[in-house]
Image (cartoon, rainbow, N blue to C red):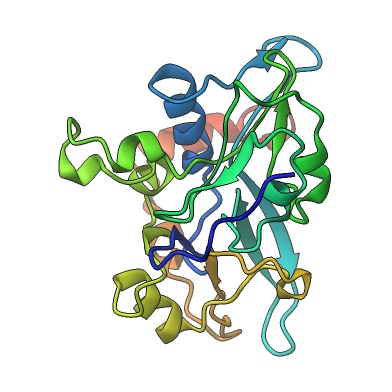
Length: 252
């Protein structure tokens, strides 16, 4: 079985803001694209355009409707990928040493040349963050884009995980969570960042920021944009409105 290295001072990871994630799946697409089309380990698909498509993804977004104790129900979009745990059970259960944790920055990786596809690491992971690539026959997982973050051939602005770089709402943050003065550590402290399923004792490096409660009387910022465009019965919009009204059933 694989041994974990001593805890590292540097703990690279993600901070995900559940308040600002809009569930657009841009991070999912960027992750799939980078790892399939660029320097990462290709993520295969099976029958992608058929009746029963399936594929390997290192990052997924789940959406839930939650009911806070006070205030209205709200939808929460929950991105999930490998959490690069300090006490990673996926590493210690690996029979070949293929799954390992880097001592220098805490990133958990898979050596695909040594992986036999036994899936023990997937069974050991309490977060369901690993996927067996059916075509390659090996386990794959988020690498924090280790091939990007240290790549000096890339512009400095691109030396961050693909999911972070592409997030349009700024919901994903990357940095050293082992440094209490880092931007990500301060963000966690200010917003009450939390571990996913802390009762598992895995000590995940990645943190989540909780969604802010919504006010039931909050003004709908879209309301002004939804006001009628034409009220005088003139112009192109009014003509379209009359044309649609003339359809069978008065479809509008």
